[in-house]
Length: 352
Ligand SMILES: NC(=O)c1ccc[n+]([C@@H]2O[C@H](COP(=O)([O-])OP(=O)(O)OC[C@H]3O[C@@H](n4cnc5c(N)ncnc54)[C@H](O)[C@@H]3O)[C@@H](O)[C@H]2O)c1
Image 1 (cartoon, rainbow, N blue to C red):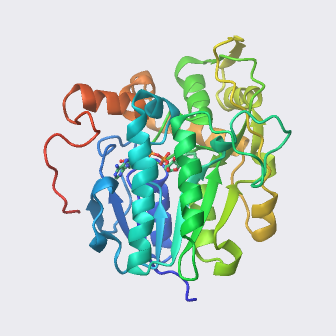
Image 2: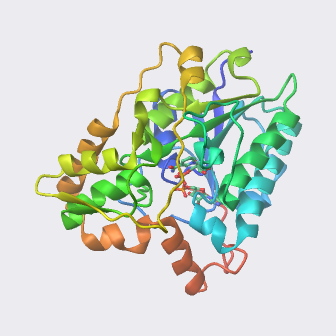
């Protein structure tokens, strides 16, 4: 099968998409972005992509949206537990049902490769030391359930001419034009930078695999051009073993990156106790030459240096623009989005 060339990238205006889209362009792919634009105005720095885009809610996809592509990289989703907990049907409809329909349209249109941005969160509170792709899944939130259900559906849909691959990411960090401060390392370094104090609201023991957003873009691209038999109907934990950290280690790394900052641990019974230490052996075995360019330490330093360069303000750090739940709530409260999370006023479908 020839290498994919034309790629439909859903969620290109999100945190990952704003890095992945330009990266795919530099690698010579013909990219078309598709996004409803929830975070249109949420730029920490200007977008750098030059590809054409379709402004569309993935719940309203049309067959022509997917026609003519070799591959779909599917990032568009409500990417957050708290959003899913707010109104569960949003996450069910957008993350699960619309993803399945996108895959159905892809099959009808003869799109052969489908990369699904999944999450290690589906392992939940693991009782085993380390979770691999065969470990039992224990999704604890609507968001995590949406990833499990979509992976299951994709597995059923795979056939000789449709190859889904599910990439189960850890928690992602690093600079993106459409920044998020609601992921763990971004938040810790942002706190260290803006307040000089990192407060850990738990004993800090839970594990988190963390992965740099640029490495996510590179790993997806690696899968995109892999021989199809290596990735056909497979799930991969996307990352590397040395990228597993306990939250307390990440907090220490954050304060080390920001001179003058310090750490305070406040063990709180209500704190987030999700833990998942992931094995990335399958990815390493399948892609032995792939190198992860960042680790938590170099990534934290990059974050701190960038915050200093752009003079990140407390308002930007704590305000709504870079925290997904807060921004959507603002759009809802302002009547810009309706109660189904659709634009109250019709928006232009045309793109740049
Ligand atoms: N960021 C992480 O730490 C992380 C970890 C694991 C998995 N993931 C997954 O990676 C993907 C991208 O994550 P992200 O951090 O870039 O999220 P994000 O919230 O920054 O971006 C998601 C994008 O999808 C778009 N979108 C949402 N609903 C849509 C709809 N109905 N129609 C069209 N577009 C819609 C949004 O406008 C946004 O641009 C998601 O599937 C997420 O679940 C992210």
